[in-house]
Image (cartoon, rainbow, N blue to C red; front, side, top):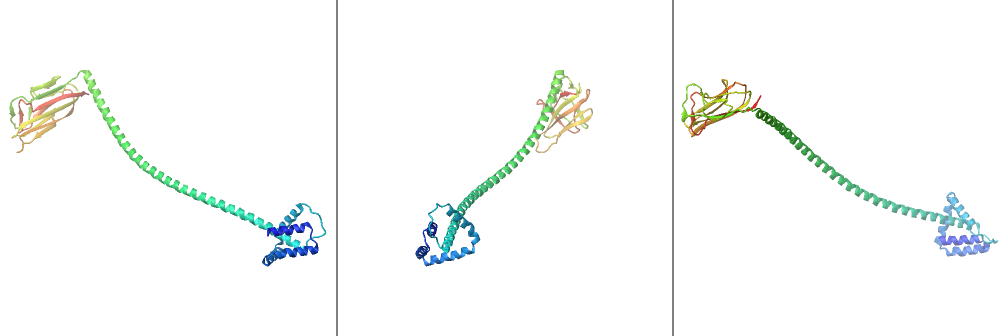
Length: 322
């Protein structure tokens, strides 16, 4: 269609066609066109007459191109008006076809761009899913680490409490050591240990009696009296006392430690069929004033055994002065 249009347009522009020759040549050209193509051209021509407003711009463009074409020698001949109109409409159709082809090409390019953008969008969506998975994993890891940190924090709190308690005990021990060191530097040293003298058990009495531990092993400071069994407190301070008692298998044993006629500590062991011997003991610290008396007693109807093994004893010493 484009080649035919160009041929007709050149014939019209050359001016070589006379009226008779133009008709003959036009007839020859139209004979070459198939009947169906001729009918299509005629229909297209009628259609373009109905769209004159749309073709006006294209026709102006064709006329402009004709004016820009190289000038041909003028002849006395010219194309028929209908033929010229047909040629102009054919040129307009060709211009519209070119425009449509350009639009189709642009549309094809746009489709390619859209497809590329779709692939890019799918790729970004896949990356987003991967990032969401990583983010979820990171959040779970952070939660797990937070729980672990909470556990560690509680453990640290417990350890802190233990450290504080240990530090407090260390401070108390340091205070005690300092006091003992001070007392040692003062030169006040008081300590004694004594055992019951004699051979065999001491028989029971109807009333509670004092015990005199006459077998003295240590008596630093001479505060203990082995004749009476009484410890006379030489200086005010905290003292530690301990005692033990022993009886054979057929008797009960029960003894007490007194401070100034006040019972402070006791220890007893009662006879049973399965005992081969009976023994008891006790000990503790007392805060004494200077001149206080500390001694041991044997309960009424109670036995105690004294022999060379020294299993019944009485001891005491000064911890620190106050």
